[in-house]
Image (cartoon, rainbow, N blue to C red; front, side):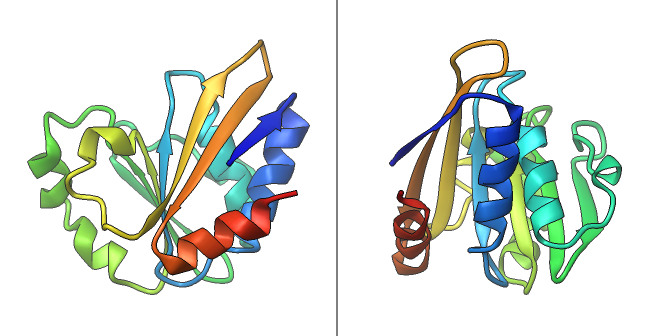
Length: 152
């Protein structure tokens, strides 16, 4: 499914709506070029999950993982600077994937072999200065249900 996000407000609304559909143990793969809005989307999801201050949500490019507390734990990963999938696996990501929080993985395409078979994939494409398109795919029954719920 493809969703038009004509401006930042639409991206924020999409993130909050997505947050309402996520569940403990959910894994979301975020893909897109630099500046596509992956971290902006994570910020909106975090707000939707009850993180009080979106300013605490920053790109974990140098620390690789940030943890936030909302109505459930949120684990925000960034695979951009990793040398390979084994580096990502060495972070102990499977413990997070198998946990009771929500995992949001930026640059998940760089760690595709480590991602669980069942997950939600959100690919952001830059259309204009603030306009984006989000291609959303669910892998597994629970994630396919999320995609259906996001459909207009």
